[in-house]
Each structure stands twice: as structure tokens, then as C-alpha cells.
Length: 339
Picture 1 (cartoon, rainbow, N blue to C red):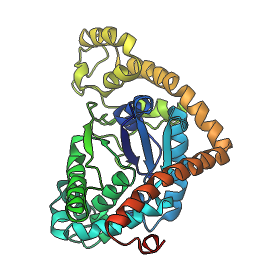
Picture 2: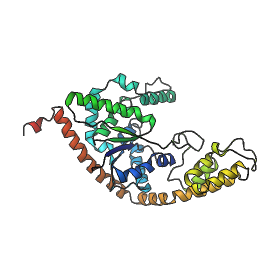
Picture 3: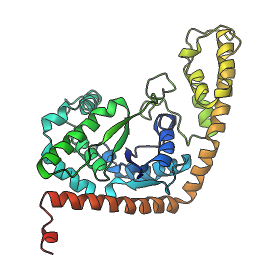
Picture 4: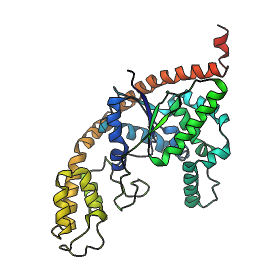
């Protein structure tokens, strides 16, 4: 049996952190063994709100790709490619833009939420929101369908984007014939990883993230500042580990000792400083091999870009096949018709 095609993307806006690793990337490592897996470095999407800083996006394409390789993404098993280098995605985006109204885009819950965040952030009634930003669900539909994506790994907050893609596919097929596949969401069962401050989301902009490339000193400093039970005043006070971010991260990287940590914490037998020092040690051990591989890629950037080049060329062949079918269905394959 042919493997089902899975398509997912990640925007190059910074290095990977623990939220990415435990929230998505570990699932990708399993998927590369089970599916025909297309992994997109979505630099065009990154430009929708970083268009004024192209150097940042360029730099982060390398950083993100080398992070992915460092955690075990295998380019022999995954089609690892750069979005902007596949012109067929841009072409499909233009064609699909005729199939969806601006009103429908503004009703997309994900778009509405992000526009509201921009209004709050910039305080200009949304006047800074660009056409490219509002229309990125159309671009995402092009990302998925260019490779005949059948399954798209998403969290619940991204389900409206997949439904938008399905609507576009249905509209296209109703006009031009049954050419495109409707993708199905592959809902993640992994909850978001919380930040050091207890925030439900870990993120660079929130200043609460542990990055996979953080050095030992940085890890130690971040862990020592992590939120603990605010009701624990003295070292021997009993505490509630369920509200402590140090215990939360112990469960991720120190699972063999969590039962003992939980018991000692509740009985007032474990001080926060000692608990944090143990976590920092385990965190650094956990990240040691990833950092070692990352350092190798930083010393050999040509390998990273060669990997991207080969992956992009292979992905483009798939996109060209899709585009040929699309243009035939739309009757804009003028020069093919006269052969």
C-alpha cells in the first residue's frame, strides 16, 4: 500500500523550543516512519508579519532547519523544503483567491483572533493588517493541495484553517472537475507545553521558553526563575506540585524520579532550590546531544542548505504534477493543447 501523504509546515521565526519539541516535533519523528511526509519551511507565511525584516527570516531558515536536523528529522525520509522556492504554491494561491471572499476570510476564527491580537498590540484599529496576512489561509490551502496532502497535523485552534482549505477544494472541484483532494485534519493529542511562567503557551515573544540551543548557563538561569507554588514560603513547607512549573518540566525530562519528587514536595521534604538544580541538570543532559548536533551544523552550513535544496527540488516535482492537472482542468494549458 502507498503511504498516505502528510503535509505540515513551520514558520522560520526563531529556534525550536521545548514547546515545539514535545508539542509537535516528536510526533513528526514518528510520522517520518509511517507516512509520505512533506515538511515545509514556511518562509512566505513568516514574511506576512516579518516583511520589513527579511534578514530575520533568511537567518531563521537556517536556524530552524538545523534545529530540525538536530532533533532527528531525516531528509532521507522527509521531503524537507522551502515554501518560497516552489512557485507552484504561489500560482495556486492566486487561482484559489478567486474562490473565497474577503468576508469569509474575516469570519475565519483563527484569522479573527490574530487580527484582534494585532489591534491590541498596535492600537490602530487593525490598519496594519495586510492583504497577505488576511489571505494566508488561502496560501495554506495551496501548500496542502500542491502536494496532494491527505492528512494535516493540527491543534484544535487550527481546525478552521483546514476547513477553509476543504471549502476551497470543494469549490474548485465543483467548477473544474474532481482534481484536488480534500485534506483531513490529524488532530494532535499532545497538549501545548506551558511556559516557565505558567502561561498555557510557551513562546519566544512571551519570554517564557527554553530553547533547544540554550547553553548550560542559560538553562540554569531560566530554571532557577521558573514559577513554583507561591504558597510555599519556607524550605520545609509542604507544597502542591501540580501548580509548580519545575515539577511540570521534571515530568518531561526526569520521568524516572517524578513519583519521588511529588511525594517529597507534598511532605515538605524537598526545597525549591534543590529541586530546580536537579531539573537544570536533567534538562542539560536531555539537550546535550541536540546541542552537539546543532554545533556541527553551525560549522557546516553548506550541508544544511544542500539538504534543503535537494528536498525542495523533489517536492517541486510533486507540485509540478499537481499544477499540470490544475491548468488542464482550468483550460489554461494553452501550449500543451496545440502539441
